[in-house]
Every structure is written in structure tokens, then in C-alpha cells.
Length: 340
Image (cartoon, rainbow, N blue to C red; front, side, top):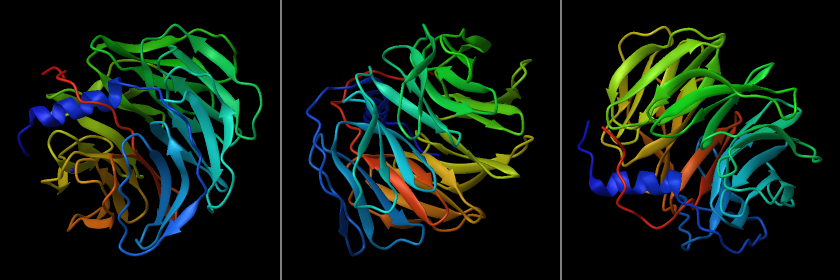
């Protein structure tokens, strides 16, 4: 985390990122399932679940969701977006708690980031970057007028995000000023994705069939291409020494030094891996086509299935002892293709 890219894979990835179908929002009661976990869902019924980083029972935190997309987690709550229902919500991490709506009436809300006080999110359909207090309250529009904003990251002063488009860009807006202006950091990118900030450096990928992994200073300047010829690279995860990522089209999990160098393949032959996160020992990821949540040692070795039998697992987060993941961001396939 190399195999051929199938038309089936490309169709699935485009429909994951590009199609949203509205539906009825139903919130069910949390429950626990026990065993080596399987968790198939009927079409159109999304969930947020958690499992120990060691495997075991899966706790259902919320169900009946309309295309749950992104996750963020703190000590007490899991925050998630519902792209289909146009909402941002939270639910207690312990399970059995009430699902609370923080924002609603949104047009295709996607990615989340949290800083301890505020929850920041991209409203992709509305072309806006917004924030809302994690305890609830007024939703603040930070800036508008963007093309398909996604994959946000925050530091002390700014929200960074990509415009996921064929003529895309990486931009930033102030965290502190309502109705501010977006600032372009780099443009002329092809489907930029995976925006992340580490040690005053901004990392991102170009999500194509011959994609790149890049970094640049958060203060601006030229971008540095760390890797090229990647097959649809996905989200990025970091520790103090390395960046980790999935190649969704190549079926691999990889790592490479933050400063650049040789990439190491940790796992290969995977079925559309994505949603990568790390802790001090392991890399965790979802395998969308096989409906599985897996882990693998940062040093490589066999991938271990923690949860299986899922319906379209998509995003994942870790808080130390548990993994949280979404299930059911599904839509009808189409014949669109990512560019070369």
C-alpha cells in the first residue's frame, strides 16, 4: 500500500467522490454486535461504527445515515458528515448516546477537521469552507466561491483545502475571519487530494492514474514532487518520520520518509485500499471492494482483518484504543474515468 486498473475500479472511485443521492434520514438506536465481525448493510443505509485496534466486537454508534463521509474524533465524541442529508453530526464515542446535529441544510458536506474548540468542514456542493463550535451553536462561513472544496487540514491560523477538479488548486483561508478570502497556494493541479499539514509543510497528492505525492511550505513557494507514477493515491497519514498512503488503483499501502527518498511497499494485492491512519505501531486502512477494515505493522508483514463483511467502508479515524469508520457511502456506478 502493482496491479492493473480495471474499469470497475475507476467507475467505483468516481461515483464515491462525485455522486450524491438524497434520501430519508433515519437514526437508529446504538447496538453492539459480537463475534469475528461482519457488518453488511442494505443499500443506502450508512453507519458509523467503532472497533478495538486489536479487533473483537464492533459497536454501532449511528445508523440509518444518508452517505456518511468524513470523520473526526476527540476524547468524547465522533463527528461526521452526511453528504446525502446535508448535515454535520456528533455521537458519543462510548456508544449508546444520542446523535446530535451540529449543522443542517448543507449542500454536500464532506471533509472535517477539529482543533479542540471548532469543527471545520468543506461544503463541497456550496463551494464553501465553514466552522461550527464542537458544543453546538452558530455555523460560521469562513469563505465561499470555491470549486468542489475537499480534504481540509488546520493549523493555528488557517484552514487548508483542495479544489478537487481537473484544473484544481490548493488554497487556504483564515480560521478566525468570517466571510474572508481564499488564498491560492498552488494551482494547475489535476484532482489534488489528501491535504495535510505536518511540521509547517503542506502535503498533498494528485489523484490520477499517474498521480504524484507532493509537499511545499505552508508559507508558499514551489512544490516538491516526492513521488510520481502513483496509481490513484488516496489519503495521507503521518508519524514523526514517515508519510503513509494507499494507492487505491495500485492496491498497495506504502510509506516514505517525510523528507523524500525511496517508497517502501508495506502491503500489495489489496482491493481498493483507502482511508489510511496510523498509531505508534500500525497502519490501519479500509479495503472498499472487499468490505474490510485491516491493519498492518509499520514495518510490513501480513495485513490483519479487524472487521469484515461491510458494505462500502470508506473513512477511518483512530483515537488510541479504537478505530472509527463509516460504512455505506454508496451510489450508482457510472462510466467516468480519472485522467492519466
